[in-house]
Length: 136
Image 1 (tube, rainbow, N blue to C red):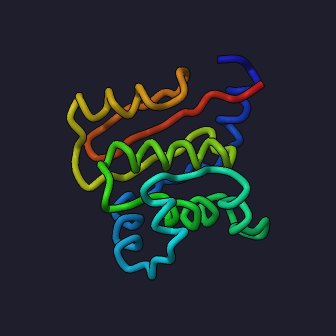
Image 2: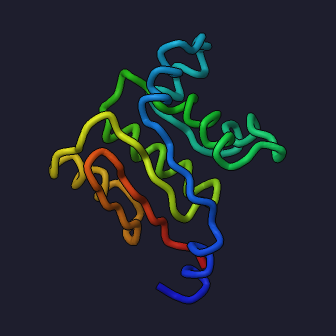
């Protein structure tokens, strides 16, 4: 890791997302057609980013965007990869995801394979810690 990446980690806010909160909110959500499309085939970009405001914290922004792409209709590994991708788009460098259960080694391997090559994912019980590489 380079010094600017270490400085980003040192100055970043430590956030922990509760995966179950996303899933339960997803179940209660009133779905529109476009939301259903995002749930099956998420499109990250201007459409999603336009729904968040600059006055929101990154935590609030991620929660709002996650409601558009986290779905009970897909595997947990897919949802977790989507959360990691959203966090990276929002510029988060280090964060945790609190899971309802410990992932199996196979599940963790699937997640790691789908993430950016230098993304570091560690699992301690039901808590997943993610460090995303800085884009220079």
